[in-house]
Image 1 (cartoon, rainbow, N blue to C red):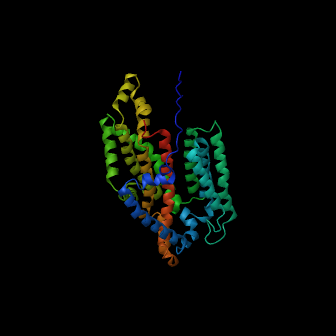
Image 2 (spheres, one colour):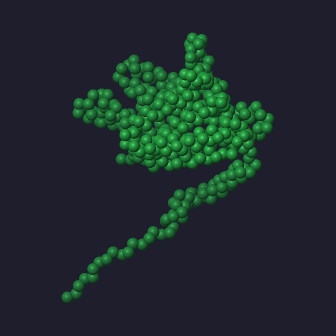
Image 3 (tube, rainbow, N blue to C red):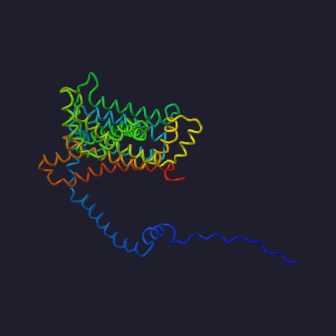
Length: 409
């Protein structure tokens, strides 16, 4: 009796070499069809030529003396040199947050903290001074800078401890550090006061951006909820506020805060120009944030709220526990985009006489004949600084979106 041969599957073959590796990537992305291939052949040489010219200029004829000789002014503006330990102390406190984030969330946060530590080490061994022009960096400045490694490790330890590794602890710690930093910069009782008008450089940009982001988000949430309210007075007030601040340019609002607002206040009212600018930037960003969140709320299916009410949940629980978390999750890209725009808009304060990092560099170029030809180097440096911060925000945003599954079912 004949027996049938046992069937065996054919051995799996590896994919073609033209479908894998860099060859497969190039075929799929650069030469997918004749039009894509034509565009690639035309544009890639032009891009490579432009990059080569830029790199050749940066490492060749470019003169970076302006950047290397004025690090203090680019960092803290006209802040007195004898009190430079104050912003350096704030830097130490911020390192604690980086360490906590690295331990609590790992992944991208850990890589960012690692890069932060590497940059700190490089700054700590620079041959020139951060707070003295053209001389060797003082030992106490190096100690402060390299001390960030210790506070970074301290933060990592706090983030690894189950008792302190909580988002609430991180947020409250960030708020406390921010308030303490402002008190140190201005001068707590017993210390000589430094007027905010002397603040400048990158420090001013960061303070305005952090203030705006921290306060604009909750105000924007309240405005978005108020615009959807059933109370006519609340709805009208929120609509008027949002439309006014979205309809007026930020430059105009900054001028109004510095010129018109003081006319309505007493002569000795203790509100400095930095505080007024921070308030205006916060309210301006809050109006746009409110519209982003309102769009996320409108994108939710009304059946969810109806089902929650059918289960007996009160209105505030439906909003806070069901609708608002989903709405914020869905508009994370728009919200982060608004915060990135807010950080870049802080450079507009130069119009009202504040010396942020851009205006500080421009004033140095205009006030020193030897730097008259260094405008290109200045603007490339400022652009690189802004790009580092905005790309970091965008990178973290993408990681959060991937973790929360934004855009996925």
